[in-house]
Image (cartoon, rainbow, N blue to C red):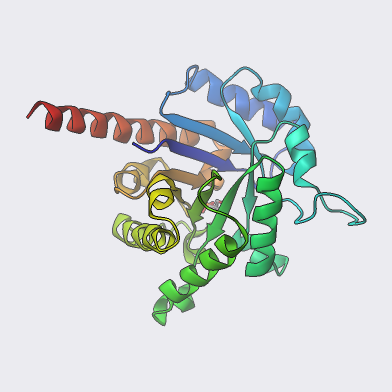
Length: 266
Ligand code: 13P
């Protein structure tokens, strides 16, 4: 069975006191993490060092929200993925739709960033997703396929650990999550697309859903067979909600373990 993941993208929120309160809140509600679910928190860049201290020895892992496609050099204002690695990050979100919309990031840049992240020892969390207009005009698969191919055109598959997050733009921050059926259909499409390159890797590939996930809708989405967890935005800023989402994922993992045990006995 694939490992499950819950990743919190804190976006441009937080400060020293709020970050500490949030990590403390998560730890109070969840003193021990499940062995089958990894938790990653992605704070705003200036707080990565503070967070490395806060999550030390907790089992919670650290990610960044963006990194340069270069490892070093004269790139004023950029952050090398090697620097993030040195500060304790294991992950970096690549190609988030907010960076595509507000910073004009392209498919090609996303691929180069993913490669630089891998070369620095980080696991890239590659985001793909269609706009409402693209979905309405029947172009969802064309867009997802193009975004995925652009990233995987730069990176090898077989040897690298890579996470892909399906985040439909119309579901991000809108309160309107994709239905479990839509999420499953698009995840199955993404896995099949990767299988054309490498069938074994496609089975191992972690596929997360993101977009208005909260405690009330998490379990139904996580129950879908091609969903390996979530990339959470606003609900990750609330310890109660975030831990409830983690527990929803844990319920799904436990249920499917029980089901497979029953099948084994039958
Ligand atoms: P929301 O959960 O706030 O919709 O954001 C999702 C997201 O963008 C995670 O990267």
